[in-house]
Image (cartoon, one colour):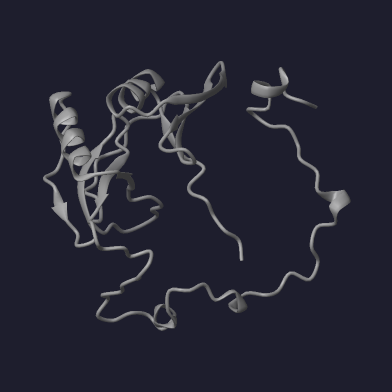
Length: 195
């Protein structure tokens, strides 16, 4: 089974990279760890943790999204509701709330979800964000809990992956065919985009 080590990056969009940097780097304290770009295009990465980051494409004409309360149902085409960032302790949650409110951003009250306490807000691009502190003594990764009163049949199969539900790989990529092609970002380490 494949073992994942976190979220390498979430990719969002902005029309104003400068206000995005001010918010994510300077207000929230996430280091700016990579920046790619050229005329009409930027792609910047901010460090969430040792393995996780959030990135923004800056594209001309992108406007902040309309704010939608996190978790509220919508209809029609829709992809993304919100992203939650974990914080180490309870006081970090309150420090973030106070810091964001002092900077003029709306922040929800602290909400008790049983296994996490959370605050909700929006970045300058309208990206819906949550900050969560894991309640001490409640570990849903160690002991998963499902409280759905009408879980689907597939959900009732349990928390562990059921790889047998998908076809086995019968034609793996041969070692000689495992080629890696240069893309945006290779210039950070190779000088120019390799051809």
